[in-house]
Length: 172
Image (cartoon, rainbow, N blue to C red):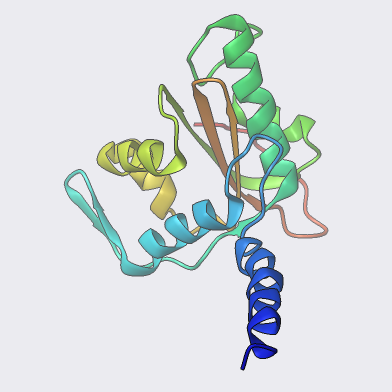
């Protein structure tokens, strides 16, 4: 029995890193899988956003291009101390996502500030009818989240179908 004790400890030590790696960290220390899981849990059950009830929506998937665009905008808001959907140069979410080489058909953005954890800013977005509406939009297929300092940015989008071109660009 004493011979098995060191083996049991070794197995526990070896198993621990595997269970600790069930999530992926983004460059900005966001637990990606946890954030995606929270968004998809909300979408799976449906949600009341203000006075409108939204039924279940399909899951979204993490997209590194949207992560890049959201991270870059969070950094920009931190640098300029400007908390807004349109930056000082007049660029909006569609133009920012274009810069990340994501050819989008549908696009949206939630921004938040002052929270230390995704679950906190996510709760605020659910309580805001317009932010909640984006989270529940069934047209959205991809997701990226960025954080820098106290600023959070969530980008959701759907890629343009192959072989199509944008004919009328509108970002509202």
